[in-house]
Length: 122
Image (cartoon, rainbow, N blue to C red; front, side, top):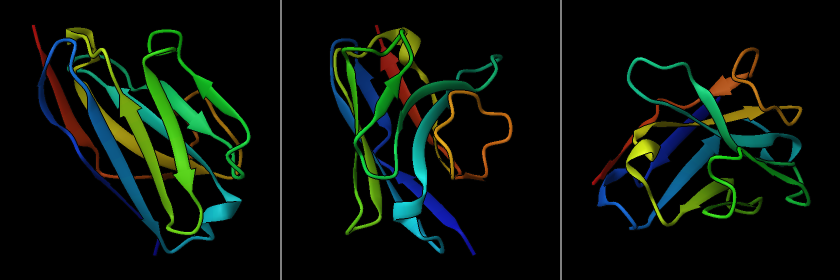
């Protein structure tokens, strides 16, 4: 049974930083591209960041480029999203996701975590 468990969400002031982590189990982690998507209230789930199975390739949404950094540790089966210079518009539930290919759309992505809330106050 595949499990993706996010942690690290919370409340932060605008301009602050947060570090999200996702612990994966039940899958051959190093074989999967890992992703972070986010969903704000009343909006569709959107792509934030992704990293290839080896960590050699990353992709970012334009809205987070330069502020968010995705990384992975294949020895620990974890993926991390370091977020800095946070803005109120970054407020959302952040989801960890795994797929055999690197995706930038939520539809069709194979495995999902339950999500962690990030709230950025102005």
